[in-house]
Amino acid sequence: MKVTFLGTGTSQGIPIIGSKHPVCLSKNPKDKRLRVSILVEWGNFSYVVDCGPDFRCQMLRAGVDKIDGILFTHEHTDHVMGLDDIRPFYFRQGDIPIYGHKRVLKALKKRFKYIFKIKNKYPGAPTVILNRIKNEPFIISGLEVIPINGKHAELQVFGFKFGDFAYLTDMKTVKNKEIQKIKNVKVLVVNALRIESHRSHFNLEEALEFIKKVNPGKAYLTHISHLLGFHDDVEKILPDNVFLAYDSLQITIS
Ligand SMILES: [Zn+2]
Image (cartoon, rainbow, N blue to C red):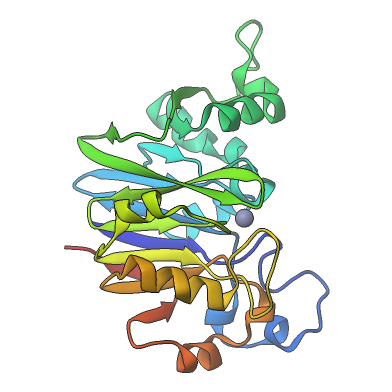
């Protein structure tokens, strides 16, 4: 299984438009972060987790020419606003399967009314196949995916475990019962926003505590704000098996 980090930034991305913050002005490509998303590939299959405002750019940058589906963690703007840009995939492949909590699917129907229209639908609009996820395993292209239920402040969010790889973003609280599902996983990705605490995201300290509880082989941090600091500086203070993800990083899970 191959995972490509399509984006590793928090909701505004890095750099933030107009910001003079040193991290936003950094020349290091690792300090430039599009909105958070990953591409997961195995065999001939490719799935994207979340589809934010940078989706088009991410698909072009990673050279993706086919997707088998999109899994949504939750319905916030930085995770869903690229949905219109599935059009090239739709034109070539037909209806695109999407997966999400029923609340997320409802939110998408509201935001992208024209995509879900049945009568007099504009011919250029894409069509999606809705797949409702509950907190129980489901199969995509022959692979079992285990949802991990968590909270983003008050909002329910799903993380996903694909084989020996787990991806969790926008988490603030995860119950012990859910942690057990990913205990000792080979590779864990989890959000770490910044140094200071935040009401709806793990800060660095909380992410590191969470990683300790999960005890993965390796962990990568994502959904990063400019306030976490320069990529190269933060990497130096992390435990041996914890790394900062960066855009276009690829990892293989055997
Ligand atoms: Zn987010």
